[in-house]
Length: 116
Image (cartoon, rainbow, N blue to C red; front, side, top):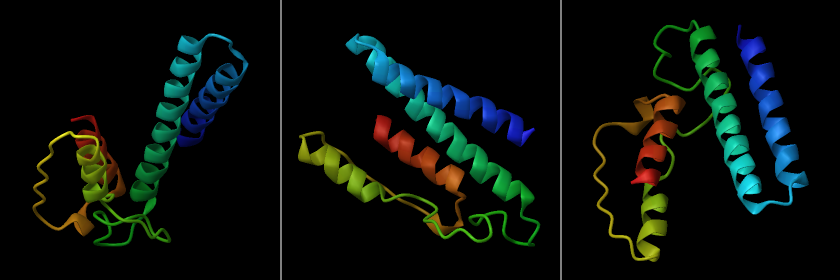
């Protein structure tokens, strides 16, 4: 199932990238780029999820898939600094051990902070 979904989403990413390059309309170009970016994120998340499901090592369900070294939660402080540098006031409160979060949870946390 993973290969089928990955193939279909990859085709969507390629087609939206081609549309972004070939269109003359700025609104269409922006929409195609948004679609391409979202598709790339979906592929990353799918790969992470499949890696987590395939890993049968006891106690690894909270870690990155075997063979991959990756920060569980991306650098939220850098994201906050970017927002503050353009005048957006931000309060960041982090609790718990971010190393116990899966990459999927880390990216989700990043997107939540990014959209606020």
